[in-house]
Amino acid sequence: MSLKNCIECGKPISTDAKNCPHCGKPSPTKI
Image: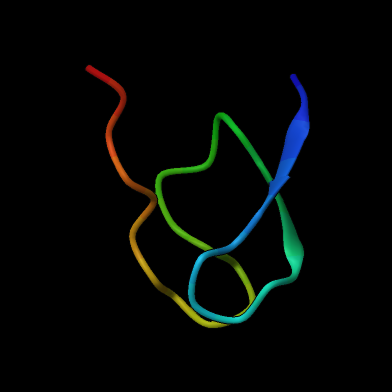
């Protein structure tokens, strides 16, 4: 597990998270 910044609110979220726990923005799916 690693962290990345949410594209919507900029807060750190897990790369395993389906959406941001802070703002609810869905994480982009990796292709």
